[in-house]
Length: 302
Image (cartoon, rainbow, N blue to C red; front, top):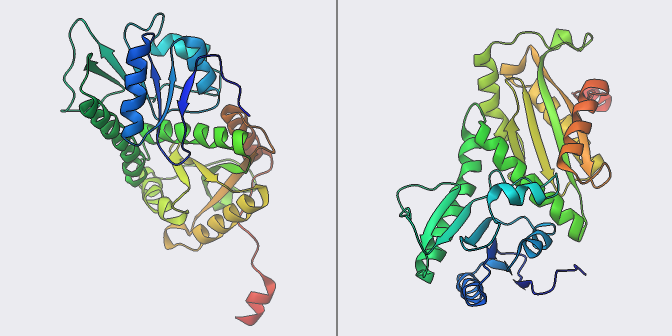
């Protein structure tokens, strides 16, 4: 049973998007909670930084709504107080402003939105919905983008932290894989030689279609990729990586290239994103997974 600081309020439903609402004024906090609960969100509310931290150690909010009168609060000082494996860099904030200039939402979305307080509940809930939908679309568009851009890496990190949080609370598995595209003749020396950028970009176009829809993929460097497999244990992820490597080797574009991979699995290898990332990189360097050997019985049958 999670332990919350005294006074923290929550309206909890596991299938809904998560909003953390912060306000020192009890009436404002109550209105925020009612507004987002009625709009179908999973809402957590707090009136001080301790309560905010108590919630965020158990949940990764999709968006944070904060009254600017909330004492001592900003993205920066909240990040300083967070555990090291929780990153707020790509978390959207909506700030409720009762004085000073307020940016009108609507033309574009940013990590920091500003909204008049007193606020229109319907307009505020609509902005939150648009912001969350926009962020979800980033992952889809970034995966379709040939370079698998920096945006994809940020979104993937956010989703990875959410998955690790879920495992810590409810159990289960998730696996993280780092893999390189290599020239086949360099496997013995374990040195990645030059591959034409256009070839790597064409490979990056193909890779998202070779993994499950629930999996996440981002490009770390020109030749290196990060692949996260929710709900997949160590043996299952190893088999998935071997199949990917084998399927990749059979593609016409891959006649001279192969995949080497390193794996780490939560919770067996840890629950910290950075720790799993480092372990997968070590495995890639020291004990890489290579394409599975052909099945002798299948070869004989052919």
